[in-house]
Length: 317
Image (cartoon, helix red, strand yellow):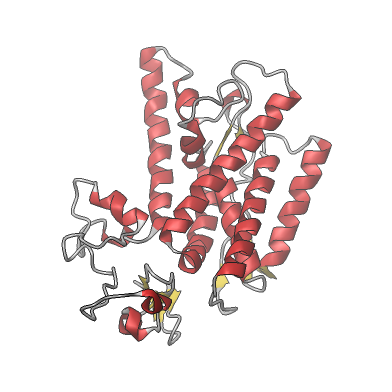
């Protein structure tokens, strides 16, 4: 559920404006009804403003489609209004969550197939960013969506589910998608770089997977844009989000400095958080952002610390 930026009405199916990035109810969905900043830059000789909201109805002719809408248009399934995937249109947060769980299922299937093919390293080669093969560029992305166990993906999903829609509303779906992928990839690459630097790299060991780098980047953006936002740590303790962010940073720095932390990729956590803080500061300086202290989130802290690593000494982040 989200809140309309104009009237404050709670909306189960909010509209995200492709031009200003705001979230609105049905009454304020049109740009002219919420004083959209895009109206100031629109030069339409016929006097008609294309809001970009209903591209799925008019055949997808709008040039302002979100990244998730373009992805869904390519699927051989009805993704228009009333279709089974309509809820994912213009909603990158839930699209990424779906991709995470689909990737997790793919890991299970590939693991079973690898046994039949007598290729025990197939899952690792496809889904884990490793110090042995950082040139496997597909793992820069697949490792962000892959996870080392059910608790690992559940923890990350909780954080992204609660925090993701807020950041996506602030920055827009396209920029949110870029933030998620770039921060996740940079977090994984930084952890692998440290493993290579520490050397020697033992075949079959090391590597990272998980979306915690992206989840912490999301949390970093929120910390800059709305530092007083109240979250419930472990679903019980209400704290401002800046306290949660500061605590995460201190823990990560401590374990990086001491070389501890087991199989948790603390360097990846810290890099993801720093990317989010930097991007949040950029958004704050370049865009007027409407924030509210009324949101009360039930997310349980930073995503995916998730316990010991999986087989082969890979680290979860």
